[in-house]
Length: 101
Image (cartoon, rainbow, N blue to C red; front, side, top):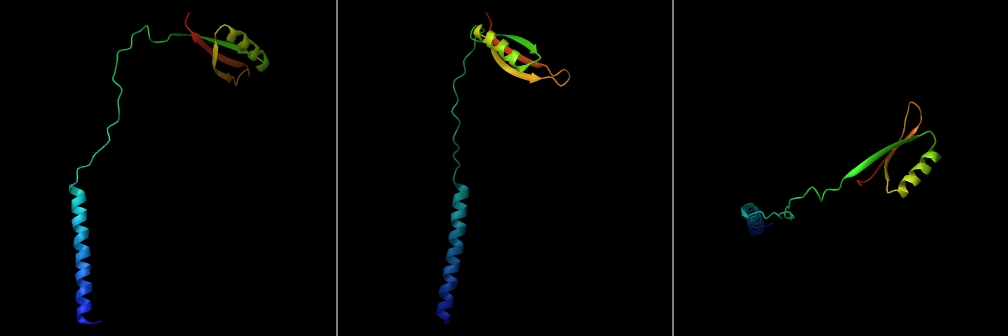
């Protein structure tokens, strides 16, 4: 390589280095714009707007009997929210809810 080629390569490297520094410092000085979450205006909730519930639990030895009971109660507006099986006596326990009447 000639001396002129070496100088040209060195000049390009220096220019690339300086451009990198300038672009990084420009990026650092830019203000960051965050997108603010949209919030719904708050309002007071009156106690008449809060739904009130009543709860019922039933226990049966067999799942078929429990299902029959839940279906009957469902016709009265009850909704099953949980069913568990006891480890001790192996009975089924269902918890139901409906809007308070």
